[in-house]
Amino acid sequence: MKGSIDLGVQPRGNAFPKPDGLAGEFFYPLIVGMCDSCAMVQLMADIPQEVRYHDQYPYRASNSTVHSAHFAGVAHRLLRTELTGHDRFIVEIGCNDGVMLASIAEAGVRHLGVEPSQEVAELARSRGIEVLPRFFDEETAAQIRAGYGPADVIFGANVIAHISHLDSVLKGAVTLLGPDGVFVFEEPYLGAVVEQTAFDLFYDEHSFVFSVSSIRAAARLFGLDLVDAEPLAIHGGSMRYTLAKRGARRPTPAVAELLAAERARGLDRHATLEELNRRAERVRDDLTSLLRSLRAEGKRVAGYGAPAKITTVTNYCGIGADLIPYVCDSTPSKQNRVVAGSHIPVVPPSVFRRDRPDYAVLFAWNHAEEIMEKESGFTGRWIVYIPEVRIL
Ligand code: JHZ
Image (cartoon, rainbow, N blue to C red):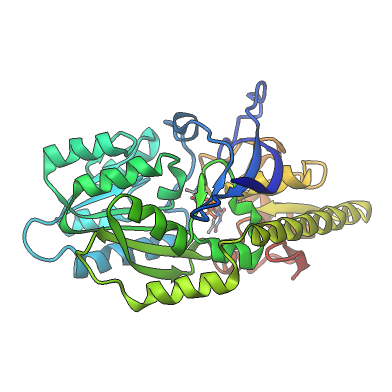
């Protein structure tokens, strides 16, 4: 495996330190490579999971109305398809604040959220969800099977690609699933990252960015078949994968179609990542020169949204509070903190509305529609940088 994308020295995407807690910030080289044999796209560095997901992990999966509706929809679909019949059981890996399991709990279906980060686990519990405060691996899977019996569904969203011990997760899935059970997970999709030059999707939490072919290859190693793959719009372009025990289910035609499309697009080639690296460099150069010229003209620029992605883009581009004095975000656990490394202060959206800046860089670009609608009174202009730098 060789590194094909170099996004420089980076802090953790979701660190959001307090302004008086910047001493000894953690940095690592953010280099992305591709496996020579299975084309899995992955970070060359592996940051220990306990450092990334701790009691104060700030991300809230219910952070947008669109996301909340999406996950309620996932729950209702699983209730209609996989969770019908007597005494069904679903396990969610990384249930976060319970955005998906809340609807399952409401329906009275047996469930268990596996969530090591205490604050979000408490939010899930307050919604009536049973939570096991642990990381998921083969040992946790065996423990759950012994205590609760086999699972009909294992679900994960924006979490399976976070776990560098993917082998242990897949072994755990084999242990925990019943004979006809399914392991369903949705994660940002490599094809969408490449198509949109979404280089900011690379940060410490994303140990992998999956494709249909890399997941099929990984699953096979552990006796699982990829039986369905479904493109999703969420997070700027994700894929929902369904795995089942070998031979238990017939793959849908979508699997072969997507595999062929990936081959045609070169998603299994180092050259594709190298080209993405070049396009990221262009975005970096265009964005920094735009922000510098706006500053020279005396324009006031703010940031909108402090997703984990903002850490990658601001540190890669060398954008600090000198170019963007603040960024607003609706998540209370991020407010009054700063973006790791670039130290841009995070403030509540009320500050943005009062301040009325001339320009706003949309860092939460995957929520563009919802944010622009919410901020329809904004009289300045939006700056986007995915797939290229543009003033709207
Ligand atoms: P958002 C997340 O990354 C987290 P992030 C995680 N690491 C993952 O794997 C990926 O998704 C895929 C704010 N906001 O959802 C809320 C507003 O301020 O793009 C969030 O902080 N106002 C698990 O962090 C941020 O924007 C709004 O109106 O990149 C969006 O973060 C809305 C809608 C959002 O995820």
